[in-house]
Length: 200
Ligand code: ITT
Image (tube, rainbow, N blue to C red):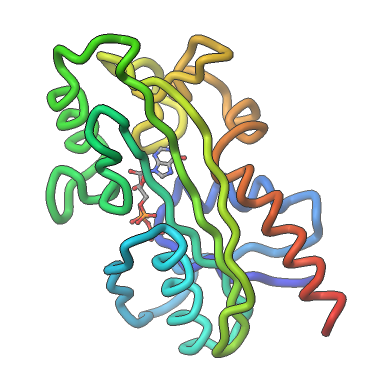
């Protein structure tokens, strides 16, 4: 069975990526299954740059086939913030609760029609020591004034999917997996993965 190491410690991401790759006979492992790894400094200005860095650093260290994923939320009323800083929006070491509290606070008083946002995901493939390719996906939404639902992770309880009038916190994972930024990027990723396996 083919195996890919996902260069992440985020359990929410691992769950979604493993679920999306399940039909393709690819075993997914993550940094949560590995011993000590080099620290990855996420200092890129774009999701693409950070995804590539995660993949290459871990591929160089392990000699394996590695996927790096970098994602975040761009809120229009905040000029695109928190963007690449989404995981640490409320400060270094901040958790989802603190990040959501800060988002609710920063958007207080912003009218419904100005609460537009999107999730973005970049996914990179690296093999041993070189970058193979990077792909991207996005998902448009509206930021709610209060949390709704407990599904998903990160900003999902605040992220309303306009076509459903519900947050990803309220919708089942099976629905998120048909439309999320990560699912959209992963569809592209599967094409580069297929090419990669064909060329080997
Ligand atoms: P790794 O670097 O180990 O992959 P991380 O959580 O630090 O884990 P990122 O740097 O890519 O990952 O930050 C992504 C953040 O963006 C994540 O912590 C959430 O706050 C938010 N985010 C990304 N995708 C999301 C999703 O599908 N649902 C909710 N929030 C999401």
